[in-house]
Image (cartoon, rainbow, N blue to C red; front, side, top):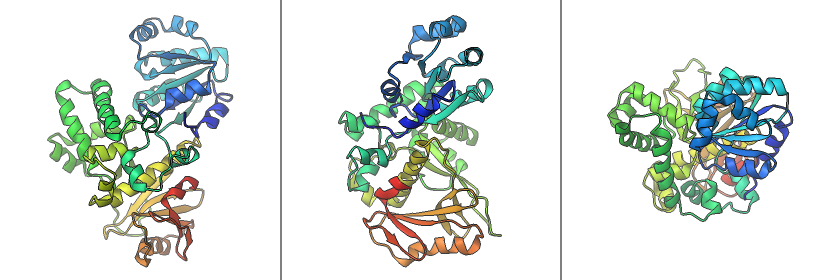
Length: 384
């Protein structure tokens, strides 16, 4: 098993909260991590129809049967349980009493908000980060390899080829998760929608255009995008609000949590196709932003990430807000740095009165300190 960097945070929080919520995409390693990390906990899967019926029909007896130190997996399948959990933990006052695991974030967080506010620590486990791969000596020298392969644990732990894994992943995701939310006749359209999203990575999201290309309405496109985000397939970056008296792009940008899945949806069959893809810069940008997000989630922190782009196409790929600071990150899929790469970093700093560090992340091998930015190789993102 590859060590997961979220593990220390889980062990810390089970001492401080009665309930821990761990969500993330299917097959990101949640069950494996929890079973190894908390060996004395009972593991109860609510995917099991008999168990699920017990929990739905008699939640009080269910929680008496599983009264403490229990992992409930796919708990969002029994939303009736949450209010009973609230009463149970309030009565017992036991830290680490329950761990709730799930792959459908929208249901879980909705019910946590309603029933368990203040009683639960919320954590996310995404596919492997470059830091985790590096620690396990699995980080290749080729960024194209990692963009193409992706980062799901099964690919590294079971030796599956990307096509073998992602073909089955998409089929399982659509047939199990999406089928519960959409009419059967819409499933093929949803798969088309998923592929169209892959072709728009790193671009400002135009829901109207996306809907037209898919043959659906804009409200449907918005609802389907919400499904993708809630099941940790895609995420969006919102535009930063500082306008400096300029017209700004107001639409969010779309990204995938896993670039291997993204490449599969783009019909890539080899890592070399990443290097020749006409929007390879967007693939590189996606890989870096997703990995930086994982670094924050693995520390139990929600990323404060944005992008900035004005109507003249001046753009900063990623802004990270801190306390009184804004750090800027530009991504360039090139092994050679030229002065033009720093132009937008300079422009933003000239416009903004808020300080911070500038970073240029590239596909080369050397760290450099330039007058306008720290130049960081892609594989050093593990330290950011």
